[in-house]
Amino acid sequence: MRIVWPIILLLIANAANASLRDLPHFRVPDAIGVNIHFVDPNDDEMDMIQAAGFGVLRMDLVWASVEREKGVYDFEGYIRLTEAMRKRGQIPMYILDYSNPLYEEGHSVVTPEGRKAFARFAAEALIKLGQGPVIWEIWNEPNLEHFWAPQPSAQDYLALVKETVEVLRKIDPLCTIAAPATSRIPKEFIEELFKGGLLDSVDAVSVHPYRSSEPETAYDEYRDLRELIDRYSPEKFIPILSGEWGYSVYNDGRVLIDQEQQARYLVRQLLTNFMAGVRVSIWYDWKNDGDDPEEKEHNFGTVEPDLTPKLAYWAVKTFSQQTRDMTFISRLPSEQPEDYLLLFSNGERETLAAWTTGRTHLITLTLDASIDQAVTMLGETAQLYRVGEKLEIELSQSPIYMQAARIHPAGN
Image (cartoon, rainbow, N blue to C red):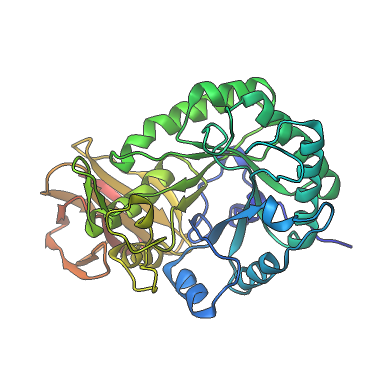
């Protein structure tokens, strides 16, 4: 008998007896992941990804590369990759994507024959790779002409999703399916999909909230998306996934992001997503795609092409170590709206992550715990100052962490 794995439930098994609507956010590392661009895993590289704390690996499962002859499917590389992930307790997030010239003339799927063939390809992928937890994402950024040519169409995309989901559910009723994987959070496009019944088909809504501004600016957009989902699915709770989002080390004359800023934004992106109730956060991407410092697309990685760690790697590793096996509890009150104090807990220990989007300044907290040291964004020890029950800490745009058996501030 084949075992089925409902991923959205698997990831929150530590919160048994709560309804899905009321559950806290996923724990680290199950809540954070990274995009990769390979199917032949190297042990040293996979170990580095695991050591960074990435629990979900997102990868294109390209239809045209798997089915080069009608009805003949080659998943060998993906099988090896899946096995390497599972060996390390990681969860694959496979993007079922892109067209196939065997069935479609354009870079989209718009014909009945193409939709049936795509659904068969997805079914084969589920059979070959679905003997354990997988998140299946249907297509990548279908609201962009670059990925759905010649013209994005919510109705054509929705027709593909519905036909594919129907086939997948017959094989595994509990498989986890995410969509629409849009570039940014385009409300009109998404609402058109919701009106057409997308939420009746999927288990999670995935979006790619790219921006040049600070990660915290995504919070209000997530809130609006949450309200939209709940309006069209009042009875069934649908989680939000941040399926792809990153910042390149890049200078175009207008926007300058160096390695330290990229590291800050990576960690603050994860923290913002937790705060907004986002259940899985995928950073784009794992490794620089090239070595041209002037090419934006080459510089999103946490490591260089030769796997030399960038500051972003050490930042996410520190975040993972400080919050491992913890869930997000709440944002604590602060006097200034630009100051952020986020509490994580595993029931035995608590971690407070603190930063500001404003200028560096001191704040004073009254805590229930005796904390004398903090850990910086990059894993170094930072000294704190205590006077009686009050703790003075310096907030900057780089998050710091404080950990104790119990932190709960009694007042600020």
